[in-house]
Image 1 (cartoon, rainbow, N blue to C red):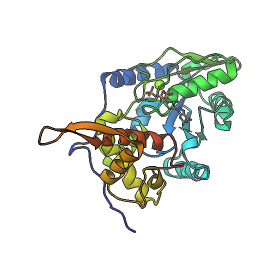
Image 2 (image 1 turned 60 degrees about the vertical axis):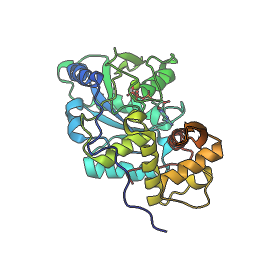
Image 3 (image 1 turned 90 degrees about the vertical axis):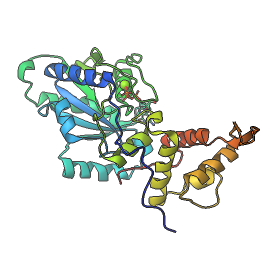
Image 4 (image 1 turned 180 degrees about the vertical axis):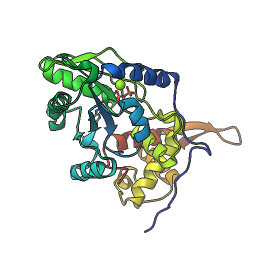
Length: 310
Ligand SMILES: Nc1nc2c(ncn2[C@@H]2O[C@H](COP(=O)(O)OP(=O)(O)OP(=O)(O)O)[C@@H](O)[C@H]2O)c(=O)[nH]1
Ligand SMILES: [Mg+2]
């Protein structure tokens, strides 16, 4: 069976989401860079390459500071992908320090590696104006909703046994400004700075935009839940991932998102009232609610681990 080679686009223009707090956050980050000894870039492991514009990263990370790439939400990709990805990132982008984490798991080995690794890199780097200082500051940055605040909280919970210090949420844009530094370790004395998730002002690569939307780095209404579900369907079919078929109550895979959503809405008993041409109220399958539920399941990993950049 062959499937379609295209997905529906939002509009003719590319996706834009650059609210005021992002521009302001970016400026605050650049100002704080002088007092930072290491930067941790957090990204979603399901899109290891998409959304990580190297030029843009350079402005944020200052280039010269020790850099760690944390690929978070590793619970949502297949384990065997990890080593391949680390090699690929090294070859393609020269990134030496890649750590895979699951911030929802206190016992995660990746989480445990972060403080010793940051401490080592800082100790062996030139700290310019900060030479001789006992304490170190680490700035965490990345696109929205990848788990930057979760990482700070899990590290702080683990080492200091202190409660969360920065707000976490399952929508993009929870952290809205560069926060005051948060202590995450006493010995060595390390602070972390949480920052708002920042995207490129204009996402010019359409498919990259859809991937970012599918994993939740953009607010859903910006692209529309039905279009996000359509991209999900396109991607899963193309990659022969048919786990959705049974869930939505179909017998076979299909290329039609309408068919998927109607079937799923019926299976779940989701209906909405609409007026027909004769002015009568009739019940129709609620495809919007079905799309929301489908996307949520994809994001929660119900259809298995997926690396969308594979
Ligand atoms: N499955 C999974 N979910 C995670 C993980 N880490 C964080 N999350 C969830 O991802 C969502 C976003 O987490 P945040 O820590 O708020 O992300 P953020 O990068 O700070 O987001 P912004 O402040 O909006 O830029 C929350 O619902 C977290 O519970 C992880 O390792 N695995
Ligand atoms: Mg945050």
